[in-house]
Image (cartoon, rainbow, N blue to C red; front, side, top):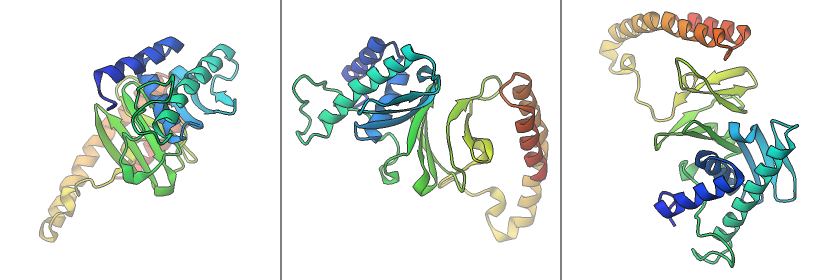
Length: 246
């Protein structure tokens, strides 16, 4: 069954409600379990206590490590979803195994050529999947998937900033970054790069535009810092990076 059908949406919602989770969180877990072939999952969602891991052998780890009740609920959800993944990959076509569900677990909202993600998660209507072997990050927002080049960043967890921006922010070995720090794969070239004859004027126009935009971005960063979403050190690092780009 297609993952977007009304029937399957109802089943996903019902499974999540059974364990006390939203439809969005349930879909995040379903994608993570499917990426692990039904035997393991790496996930990240606030309803699951942030980042965590699950395996069918009985191991469950969540960010809220002292919340035993939440840990048991997460494990139960992952276990039930893993049975559906097993049904879908058992070699019996679309027919579910005896006692199984008709849900076709959403295994690949990301481009198929990226393969299997090392981790996946989502927050507030946005999903993400990390592909470190290909240096790629896929993000689904409002049904549209965008792929980013992660370069040499090793991406960990994600959090959504509140207030003036709704961008996903990711933790890396070099501190926090957001999607604005990453280049879209296949993005259109900058106007300044189009045509050697117009290069000088384009560079001047783009530089002027960036200079005008930087104070606004610094003000946004200051708001995030004042609201407690950024530390002073993170604010200083991002501000310095913006000023260096002038």
